[in-house]
Image 1 (cartoon, helix red, strand yellow):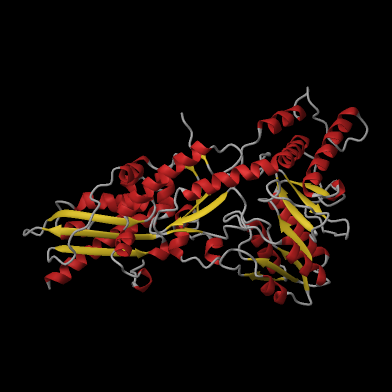
Image 2: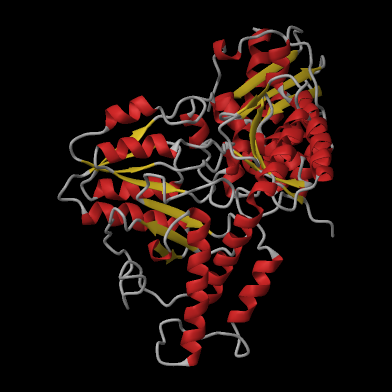
Length: 404
Length: 126
């Protein structure tokens, strides 16, 4: 069976074979299966050595000290730990948090929970290109603001926020700065030795590591303290209890090390592939790229083909695996909240497709995708009453729809 | 959850895609849904002198299930009178296409569309 071409790298990535091979050495009786916290015997020491090495690998990629890396089950847990951890530890200083409407649900939903606990959260609107408006951010800071959480790279539209500028403002105002870097680590440079960032969330499965594994950077200089969210044996300096999953940690470390070594070359390659893909649609009518094209991660192309609904297009191009911001693809029947926050009309949000290319995407893959998309967009436009109306010069925003 | 076979079939081989002359006295046009909802269906029917639907055409902006629901409807109404066509229930569409719960609203829209087309025809007659 020929499986579809994978172009949904922003959703998840396959584990790199080099990573999988290394992980396999920490599972069975023949491998180093010990509990890293077993301080008194060979099995524990072997596991501990592997964990230490992985901790350095992760720290190296992002310019941090290994002691600043806390292992978690993924970026969702890291986001929870960072946001709830700061809120509950420093709540006497203040109870106001600032974030952006386009954040991942792991951040937004955590903030909602804190609102139920009596915190106040400001959810800022991004600019139409997806970037944070620095002036608006500055003016939203209050005396009682303790935390700002802004993601480095957005998962849907791939735009890159200016961490230096945001962090400087946070420092000036004594606000902790948390960054969700799930989509950026290993793809663009991050130097926490220089950036004014207090906490940063990482994910393994977005960068060719295993799912169910992540980390949280917790700054030591200046010192940041957190209330633990998972209690138990006091692992990870008391910040996150639970026996360390050696094989998962080794996998994340190896994935991050490979990313460090190959980031530049891979970035250039995926950039060219993305540009090739976009060029393939350049002469089509009514095509809109969502999010800033310059301040954007190399592999992401979020694009709307107007008058064609996203899920029908995904079904039509089922030989390519992608995702859409269309309501039809979400269980809630609501279109992408990220695209809505950019100010996109509902129809453009419903018509969006996200292509994300990665390590194993070839030029042939891109060319095949272009051919398929062009053909199917045309076919669906021939099926679409909205395309007819557009061609007849009718202004759709002036129509009174009989919605049910 | 992969796409249903019947839904895919209607998408790959849509029946009755097209336009009828909406100004003709024997043509009824129903346009339902809204771009904001991600679903817009235009269903048109043409009756002969005996009041039987002899032709039906559709165009749909929406997901595969929406396209299939409206396509199926154009197949079903041919050869029916207006009264018979107005009896078609969305649940029959759900059953035929094996639509999952999250897609039932597509069949409801299709039922709305045929009713709107019938109403349009009736208002032309009066």
